[in-house]
Image (cartoon, rainbow, N blue to C red; front, side):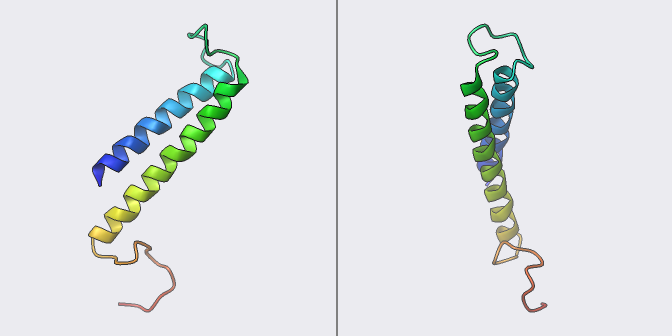
Length: 78
């Protein structure tokens, strides 16, 4: 469960760095700075990282006692 969260955080950070380099906001890399493909790759990696974080949160809720993993989903009250 925590592994998914760690992977999600790392992917989000890598994605943000790649977005920053692709948009030339971070100009420390001579190979990646200002190249639009790194912006696109960064967005994809960021979305995958957010998916991992959502997956980790859903599993955590399920383990904590919510069998659906969705709190407040409009179902019957317990």
